Image 1 (spheres, rainbow, N blue to C red):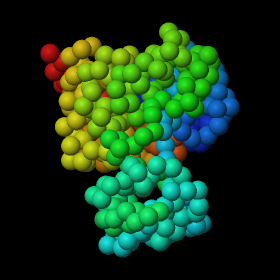
Image 2 (image 1 turned 90 degrees about the vertical axis):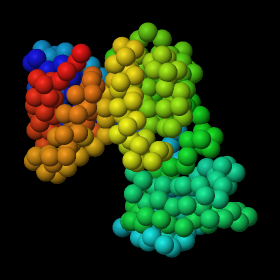
Image 3 (image 1 turned 180 degrees about the vertical axis):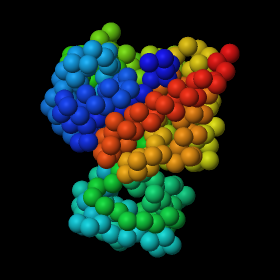
Image 4 (image 1 turned 180 degrees about the horizontal axis):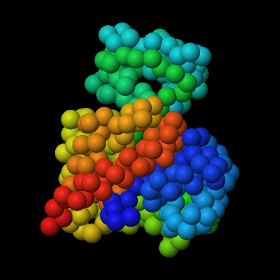
Length: 337
C-alpha cells in the first residue's frame, strides 16, 4: 500500500480474537491502540498477544500503542436506566463516594470544593452535560445546568485542568507503563499531559523500551506546546477532552497549530477522536467526516485514529478500509512542500 498516513485502530469488544483482528489488520491498520482506561490489564495483555499472532499470520508489521488512563474522576453511580439532568435546573455537587441522582451528584474527589469557584464549568461524560457553579455553600457546590441530558452509570467529571490538583502521570499510570513496556508494546501514550516533565516521568519508567506519545487534551498542554513536543517521541491531538477543556470552537484552530508545529520540528503527530464516529452504526461516513479526515491529511498529520468506530462498531474492518481510502485519496493532492 502506498499510503503515507498511518491508521490507528482502537481494540475493544468488536475486535476480539485473532480472526477479527486479522480482518482489521488486513483492511489497512498500521497501529492498534489498547485503551487502558477500560478493562483489566490481563485482558489487554491477551489482546496484545492476539495482535502479534494475527500480524504474524498476515506477515504484516503492526505496532501497538498502550494508552494510559491518566487522572480520571468519575461521578457516583446514577440509578439503572439513567436520570435526566434538565437544562435550567440546579444540582448539588458534593465530594464523596455516594450515589448520584437528579438532585445531587457525588464526586469522589476530596478537594472538589476547594478547586471549584463561582463561575467554574463542570462537565459530565463527553461534555454533553455542562453546568456552571453559582455558589459554594458549606459542604456542597450549587450549579446551574446549562446543557442538559441523560446521565448514565458513572460518567467522567471534567473540571478545568488549571484548577485540577490531580497529577499526571498517576501511580497507576506508571505501573501500567512498566507492565506494557515489559510486554513489548512499541508506544505508550501519556494522558492529560500539561508539561514536558509529565512525559519525562514516564520516560524514567519506560526507558528505551517504548516510544512515548504525549496526548494534547488540556489548555495547559497547548500553553506549553514547545516543551511537551520536545519531551515526546510523538504527539496526539486528542480532540475529545481538548474540546471539553477549551472552547469547542477553538479545537480546529488548535489542531492545525499543533500539527503544523509537529511538522516543523519533525515529531510525528496523530489526529484523533470522532473522525468517522457515525460508522459505529452506519455503513458509510458523513460527508463532513470524510472532509475532516482529508483535511487532517492536507495539514500534514502522520496518522489518523479510530476509537469507538473499531472498538464497539458494527463493522470495524469496513471503517478501517474507509479511513484508508480517504487518506490515500487526500494524499494524491496534498502539497507537502
